[in-house]
Image (cartoon, rainbow, N blue to C red; front, side, top):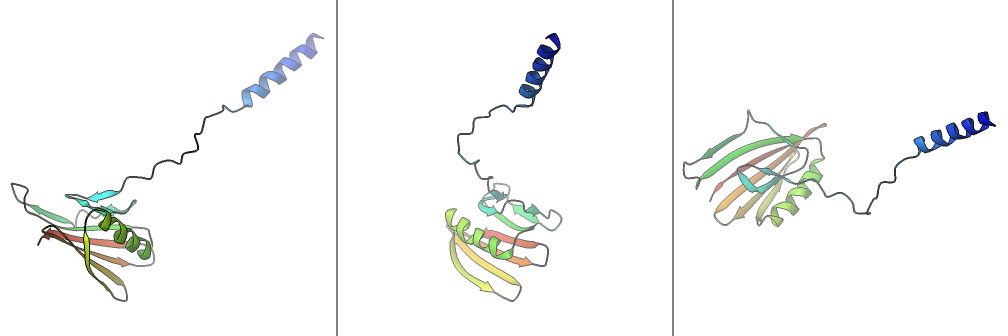
Length: 139
């Protein structure tokens, strides 16, 4: 009888030890990752998972901070069409107006304007990566 009780207790302990904890899930999906910005231009977005090529990028900012000019380079592993759609949506969401766009065999160029500022976004891709060149400055 003691063996049966011990075996039953061991079995019960084993089963409860393997049971998972119920974690409450309210059903809400996690928030999307924040959109990166092309510092110092906080109103120019950069797609998630793109990294800045610091050696190629440069920024000129006057002492007072009123004049900013930059040429920034980024790269990532997304399709050029997806990055193009990202910019067509996000630049408008940040108050930029599309002036024109130019498409060549390998490149897509988007020109935007916003209250005294201009920005050119050039997309280029190869088999593995998409490259973004952002030029921004005063009008």
